[in-house]
Length: 183
Image 1 (cartoon, rainbow, N blue to C red):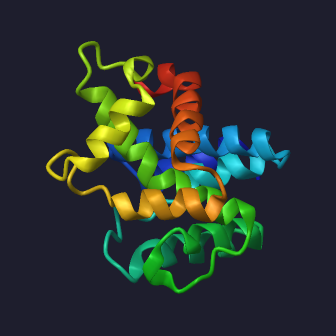
Image 2: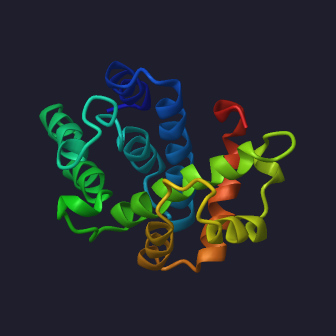
């Protein structure tokens, strides 16, 4: 299981450039947290990259993320990866009982929200986004209305990282990947 193979798998299931960028952003956040926690950066990064691989084909529960998890299992991906992918959806019923699963859940919604914050900045750059402005925008229900703010808060709590610190960490991860993300 290499990162290149994971990218090919993602691209075979996901054609949308936006969904691919989301996968790259979650990959960056997962790699950041793997380094922070002293975990396997490659494994965590691949998990982030593949977490929504089935979303374009199967966007509705319960098919997403179970269809992607089935394919990952069939291809021989480690059970830890499959479990984290399944657990990132609240409706799956799969517990987030590993640090990797908690990190994936914590990063998924937040990454989308941070990208939305960057896209309304004057230069559309992630480096322009500040923690304080993210916290303010989280209170504005009309901004990025599809993003589940409760999931962002719950994710930070489950991960055991204060929300402000989690936002700062994820911003840093996205800054590292800004070129790939067009931000």
